[in-house]
Length: 411
Image 1 (cartoon, rainbow, N blue to C red):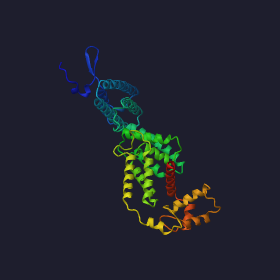
Image 2 (cartoon, one colour):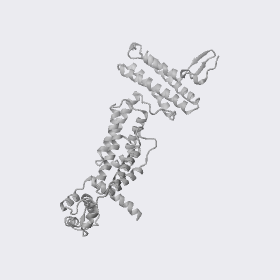
Image 3 (cartoon, rainbow, N blue to C red):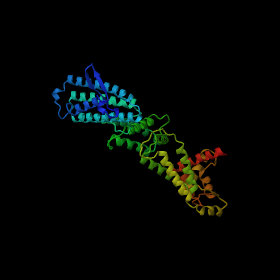
Image 4 (cartoon, rainbow, N blue to C red):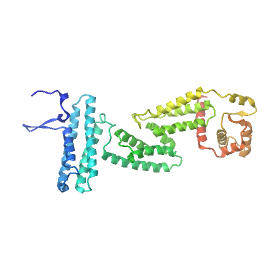
């Protein structure tokens, strides 16, 4: 008999076994899977099956055969993979049988959906489906280095995964609703992505995408600190949530921060401080929402760098130096009225300013302090912003205080 080179042997003939002394039988994972493909397309097809033949005994025997075949299948997969030497050969082998199993699971899911709720037939499909899924799970667990995470998940698994994600999202929504300070936009970014999967707005979902959503929800539901906008944002940065809508919202947040500043230097300082915070965020390795997009940090850094370059290229307004020279009897600042009001209020709360009444003190401040925009501060405007500070200005002052801490470390 002429020896054939191993590379020319078809996949269906990758395993040879001898039964007894005379009978030669071909057995391989592909042949076992091909056998069940034929059964599901033929004898077990709901469109042509004779329901009278689907007795309890028949179902029991078929489920037993399925269990036996898939135990054999798992042994053969290990044996075959052990015999391969290169990573590429192992990867292609696993990918081939992974794809085969997924197609089989999709087929049995279609059969299950196409049949009536006849008890024996449903039990038969469920039993075979369970064995197929267990084999696929076995491959993912033991051949993880070669398992194709970019392959679609099978339909039966997709159905279970959607329900799990729905329950996790509901738990997260309940937890978030108990914290009034949480930014609703942050929650919506997460909820919208998961709802696309739950509502099947996407044609399919890959193993990689499903694993990402599992990790994301697990991180959010097991936070060791109190759930807040900051902890959610930190988690999204940690898991490299480079989802386009979230990134656009982060650009808008930065734009809003610098709009509260008057001078270009102040805007640049704010951007550099934000860049420092972003770059100091820890990131989980090999984890991202989308492989087709640059990382979240990379995109944020790119936007900040370009904005700083633009601001640095703009000429400084001549009005700044002229304003300072006009009146040396006042304290000139680059603050806005809103920021000045919050800083004065902090000094009062901390009992650094100890005037008994606020209004007269604010009148003195309005007469002796200027902002970059106005040489004369309106007492009414200062008083209003003192008693009713807006959220954006409060956040801007927080950033300023963090910058002061950094400056103090250098003194």
